[in-house]
Image (spheres, rainbow, N blue to C red):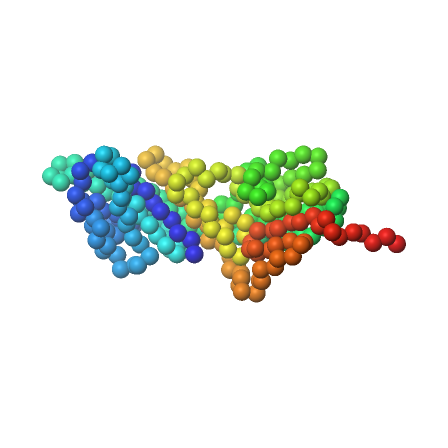
Length: 260
């Protein structure tokens, strides 16, 4: 299941525990989630992490953590830090965007002859799906640079973004794990990646343009959920399928085409 950590930007030094509060903003009103390290909400998926990165020399961190993120968790959240004497308070807002999105990639496993052509196709569906110009392909978690033998094509249709990777003449060096991505590097400390089912970059929390003084996170809940129990780990000279969500592509040295 997906999790998200929302950072509190309303930092203040020498703040007592009971003076830090997280709210979920509603229209109208708001609901309080915690007072210091004491949780008010009855939802066990919520927790507040208090920690110091330099033994108190700088303001402590008060992050709101949500596990098993649901569509209903999408909302504005506010961190409120008040001084001990109540003369000063600081607030920061975070907008959490939760969306169902599906990323399908085919084939899952490809075993080809040296010199053969092969093609991977990846489809993104969802309201906030990646635009075609942002799509990238990665091989073994490294960006794949298109060339004469590695052709990438991406098109954006009315309800889906389609991208294909075509390897014109497969070589032994092409063996590896391939995945498609929205092109954003994980620069944010709170970006998480999870893999589930046949998807490629299954959980990505990405920056989203919002109004001033707000910060947004995307949590992508991907369907369908695949029953992984029917996949077995296979280890042979040809390939090793270690997880079904990442296509594992191998050019087999031992196979020879039959001559007729």
